[in-house]
Image 1 (tube, rainbow, N blue to C red):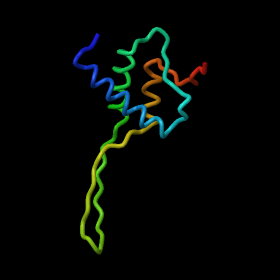
Image 2 (tube, helix red, strand yellow):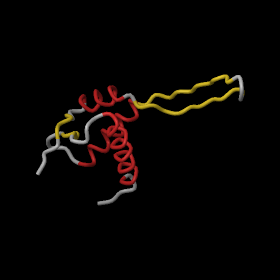
Image 3 (tube, rainbow, N blue to C red):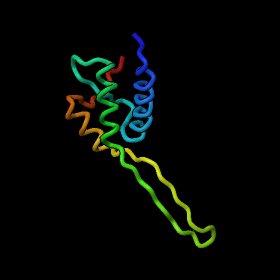
Image 4 (cartoon, rainbow, N blue to C red):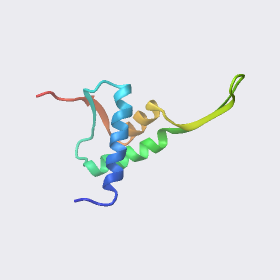
Length: 96
């Protein structure tokens, strides 16, 4: 069943997959017995929100003047702790 939230959940899952690909081996996955894809998406979205930190930075370059940047960083430890607090465990994927 597709809902209007499905694209948002899928986008969040893609973002986390990309971000976590840099942080941990591809042979790991989150698992929670008795859970569903929908609950995973909700928990993932909540934990991503908890783990995001806004930043802004201003630099003075003697050649080009002032430059600034801003964005959001994701703290992997905060994300992992949040998922674990919701009952998820990071485990090795089973190979066929």
